[in-house]
Length: 214
Image (cartoon, rainbow, N blue to C red; front, side):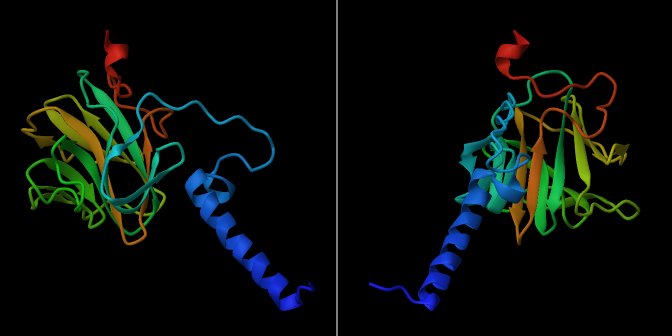
């Protein structure tokens, strides 16, 4: 049976669509730091990643569980147990987003900072907890491509923008907390738990898993 030119074009188009979907979910093409087909080994997975068992139903993780897209929240795979911890989140693509720390029981189906179990900075350039705006960032606004840093010592949660301390400490956080992220409306966030973009504050280090603390 002969195949028409139009049918060939349609098959080619469908193939390209499936290829794009594969690129998104499996971190190839634009989503991957290594071009497909060159035989580069995947980088080692960090000790802390984003937890696929603790996220909103429409959230999507790619890039070895370090990138959040779709709609919903996710928490990190390990809580903050050491005295001084530091991590970062890169605003890979703008939209609606929020990130900070949350209790294990915080609601990952809605934007963070709306309940009493999460403390975050968000895309409206405010720092928020339990729907209360604690600080407004009038001078330094977070934009696409920026890196937001977090330091937590069980007394204060501090926020940094491209390495600059925003001087907006949150106090009174009780209980064991995890790094948490939320995206909607096309936002994409990259969690950075190692190999930081900027130097951590003095005395702070990456989040240690329990085995590394022993």
